[in-house]
Structure formats: structure tokens, C-alpha cells
Image (cartoon, rainbow over all chains, first blue to last red; front, side):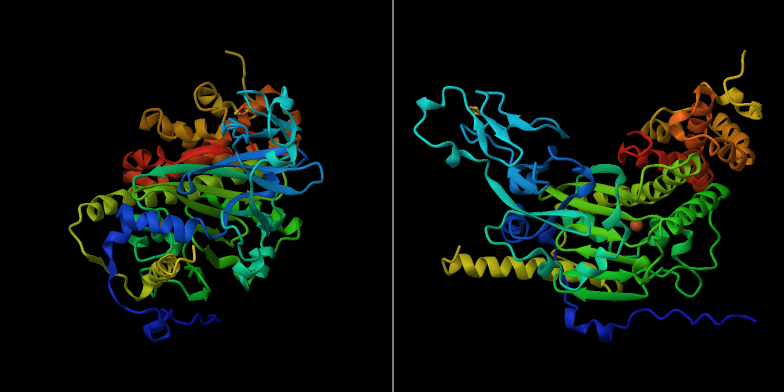
Length: 399
Length: 111
Ligand code: FES
Ligand SMILES: [Fe+2]
């Protein structure tokens, strides 16, 4: 009558040999010169996940996003034609930042300085005493940047000719579109700032080696007798992106009645909405360079780690939901599911800065990744490849 | 003192003033805002009434809750956070410091 659960087997090194086993230069995690290369080679060239279509429900809906790594403030606006566009938040008269609000809805954007007024489609539609200028209104549209959507997620790119987003995401695009985030209408959000390099921060969330030490109480289901470190069941590599299928100790009890009630309500609601756990329900998607999405429908969270400088970053966590709170039970469930993930993520945030202090001291020439930290290694490899390609192009005078 | 909560929830009345956080961020902060003994008393009062409280509130659309129902809702939402103090056990005080850097900026309940 016992159903046989096969013993956990970690992914074998021989399947990962192609990623190398070399130590990693520590300076990549604090050196401002290396960070400058990453800015150019990675962040000004990649698609960056920056929001969700549910933030722009109507014509005129907009959000402002500060992208320090690109030295840019970006307005993302849904136009009268319902298209979503992205512009630099910069008045084309003399450069004043147009919009101070973080989000809102308005049919036009007026510069506070001399009242040039732009439409939601970015055209200059009004400018006091414009006859005095020596330029046409058509030449004064807001500077646009590339924007595209996949699975409801808004991506922007500072590249002049970025690849097609779906090609950039490769075979992950279809899998992302099958996840609840594609249908999400609202979200819960918590944010943090941290004195740590963006890769050091991000890496914490793509290795499980730390689980038993940093989350001894808050993630009991993540480890178990035959998998004491909670290593993943599988890794996947998709161009610059990567996935891991987390392992779950099915015997671990949920920590409290409140947690049982919350998961019970969430699963019922998802079933009523026709959302069933897919194969990808235990997969973490790590989209290059700085974005995670966890496939679990009940705790469907995303995490973006935005560099501010070489040793400072900002993180944004969101739990995506379909529909507004439909009942008291659902409101309770969402609040508790958020409190659960926030507890774990607070523990993560708490440990990372100590690592940065050590690295920034310059005491280490190298750091080391073990077999089961291979996703961290893959990120470094991809960043390094992008930097080397950029350096080669600059040397050849291509850029 | 007149009742501030729907009938049947008298056991939560002593907590109605101090534990009904208005926003998710306030409720998360309440987990560490009062003395441990008071926090534990609040959790002990909520635990046996959680299922009953949600069943009672589920009878009314959220937008139509009266003041007493809203207060009960907020108490149970605060309990959504406070119930986790028991999971942290002896680490809770240290953990509270870690949480302050993780700022809640939006929930559907706050919109
Ligand atoms: S700088 Fe914007 S109107 Fe002059
Ligand atoms: Fe962690």
C-alpha cells in the first residue's frame, strides 16, 4: 500500500561539465569598471522585465519606472489606440523630466517648465508660442524605446535594434504564456534596497545550498531526509535564461492552520478560475539578466533585481493574482500567502549584505560555485560572454 | 464598552482597538509592535475563530461590509501575519528586524 517515492538524486556534475568548474573572479561582484561594462553590454542591450499589462488597464494609464542602470526614467503609457509604448520621461524642449507621479491616468503629459504638452502616443500636441521655435512639432515627439509584451509582462530594451522579444525568450515564451501571470489582473508587491551587487543578490535566489541555514524555520518543505539541502530536481538552460524545478518534501506538514486555510482557499479559487497546476508549477524561470518568475499558481511570485550601482541594488517582489479579492476568505489567503513569501525573502535579503562587505574588501581574488550552484555559474558565464562580445565590438570599432 | 465586532466574536473584542491594521503594511508591522504576551494572546484568541470568522464574513460582499465586519476582517488579516510569529519561535525578534527592510507597497486589499 506504500506508494514508492524514488530516492532523491541530485543532478550529476557530468551533465553540467559544459558550464565549466573554474573559480569566478570576485571583482565581478564589486568593481565599478566591470559594472560599467555590464551596464553597456548587458543592461543597455537586453530585454528588461519592467511591469505588467494590468498596470495599464485603460487608454492614458501610465507608469513611471526609474532605470538607474541606464541612467533613465521611463514612461510606459497605453495610448488611445490601446497600444503600449515606452518613452524617455524627458521633455524634448530642454530635457526636463515630464512626470513626477509613479503611476496614474491622463490623456496628455505637460512639462512643468514651459508647458509643452505631449499626447499618450508621445507626440508634441501643444507648445506655447511655438512659432518662435525653429523646429517642427513632428520632430519633437518624446524619444521612444523598444517595448514588447509576453505573458502579460512588459519588457523594455534600450537597444536600438533589439531582437524580437519572443526570439529572445526562445522556447520559454510559450511556457510563460501558459502561466497564471498571463491572465493576472492585480498583484501584491514588496520592495527592498540592498547594499549588494545585483548578481550577488540574484544568485541567492538561484541556489538552494543556503536553505537549511538561512530558512531553518520558514521553509520546512524545501528540505527532507533524502535531500537535506533541498537541491533542485532538474535544471534547464535556454540560451541566456535558465530554469530549475524545485524539489518538495511532500511529507512536510504545512506550518499552521492559517497556512492550511490560505492554501485551501487559493487552490479552490484557482480551480474555479480554471487554473490548474501545470508541469511548470514547480519551476523557477530565471530570465536574463535580472528577473525571476516562480510557476506555482498559489504563490505565483516574480522578483526583479535592478542594479543601482556596482554594490547597490533594488529588488521588487510581486505575487500575481487573477481577479480582485472575491471574498473575505480570498483576501485572507492572499495576505497570508504574501506574508509567507515575505518572511522567506526577508531572511534572504538579510544575509546578502554580509557577503558584499566581504567581497568589497578585496580580500578574495576568486569565489567558488559547487555543482548545485550551477545556475549562478551560468549567469556569470552569460554576463561574461556579453561583456567579451561588447569589448570585441568596441575594439573593432563596431559600436 | 459597546461591541465593536459582529455577534459571536466577543473573544476578540479586547483586541479590536489595537490589532485591526488598516493596510497590509500596518498589519505586517503589528506582528512586532506590541508585547510578546499580548501578541500571543491575540494569536490564541484568533486561532479557534479563524474558520468561523471567515465563514461569517464570506456571507457579505467585501464592498458591503459594515464597520463591525470590516474590523473583524482587519483583525483576521493581521492574524494572517501574526500567526507566523509562532513559526519563527525564538527567532521572531531577530526576524522582525529583517522584515522591516521588505516594504509592502501594494496589495489588492489596499487598492
Ligand atoms: S523644458 Fe519642457 S517645456 Fe521647456
Ligand atoms: Fe533563500
